[in-house]
Amino acid sequence: MIRRLISQGVGGSRGPTPSFTGKHFRPALLGLALLGIFLALGARSVRAAEELYKLRPGDVINVTVSPQTQYGRVITIQPDGKINFPVAGELQAAGSTITELTRKVAKGLEKELNNPQVTISLQSTVPEKAPQITVLGAVRAPGLFELREEWRLTEALAAAGGPMPNADLRRVTITRADKKVQTLDLSPGVMGLEARTNVPIKPGDLIIVPEGVPDRATATILGEVAKPGAYEIQPGMTLLELLTVAGGATPKADLTRATFARRTENGLRQLDLGALLSGQDEKLNVKLENGDTLIIRENHQRAVVIGEVPKQGEISLQGGETVLDLLIQAGGPGPTADLAKASIMRRGKDGKPTAVPVDLKKMLQAKNKQSAMAIQHGDLLFIPAKGPQKRSFLEQISPLGFLFGLF
Image (cartoon, rainbow, N blue to C red; front, top):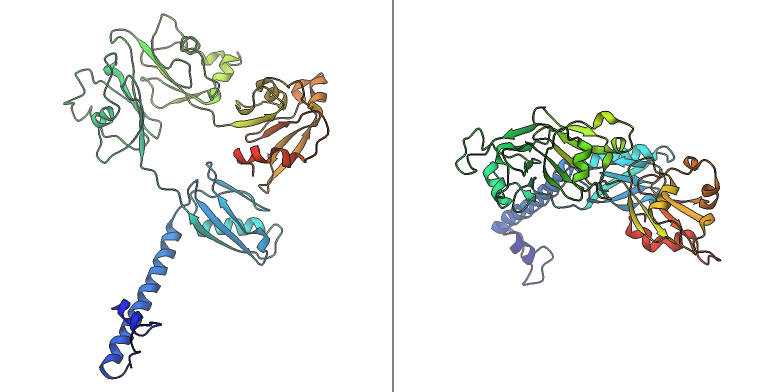
């Protein structure tokens, strides 16, 4: 009906234009009215859906400001859920609706602008991820898995390929998203479990099937260590000894936020293994008990070193590092490095990268090395080569800075 009306009379080109008289007049008007209603309802539905939508990391938004058009830009919401906007600074975007974020940006701009008219629209969204669970330990295919409807423990273990022959099924643990830990005895076998043992699986669950000889006490260490797995507990064995027999932490380990679980306790404990390893807190070096689990996750705090150093690239930050620590971790200066003309690239409150000159030569000569400039997450240290610089600092690092999200 609508398509026929368009082809016949509303800007159409086929056939003579009909005369809307007599019996043709009312049906034609009715068709046009219905077309208008459909279009209006469609636009209203799109607007309503956009208002209900909660922004997520990775979404791309288009921000316009009137009459100050120079502030308009397209922005991608960062993995931490935030955006950086000129004048307004860093704002939490993920979890907000378009209307809520519009108000935040407008309020931030009012620090310098008079009555800015802000409009935000969605340019693209990231696909919503299916809920996931993690299965680790003595299973044939450990890893992340998409959670299917009505999955129980048997389905989760089956997705991970089932238990290995050396699995200790008497103390399988499930850590929920709320940090509560449940220990289950599956020793009679995985199939045909009772309902109280074959529990439903929820989004975010961490399932750990430990290794070990069933008749002996074991502790499990997982994550960023050289040799993750279950280890037999020797008499008087401590947490630090467990880390040692597992080959120590990897360079990507976040030692300040390790997680420790004990099946006789509810919940998880957060441990600063960095303080333990440096001898600052010996109380953390607890004696191990059967079923203890230590998880060391990857550190997402990063800085970058480029230029005249042997090892360019990202460096994990444990907290409290200075620019000299960054230089040492990058292998020290190269033979052509101009330490006196180094620079730190750092984002300002307006979200724009700013170059901060750093005289590493003077810092190395200072008696108090701890007074050196502190490093922040996202910093980029650039050490140029000796000789006249034909290009500015930003021109030299912009190709690599783009790779690390600085531009």
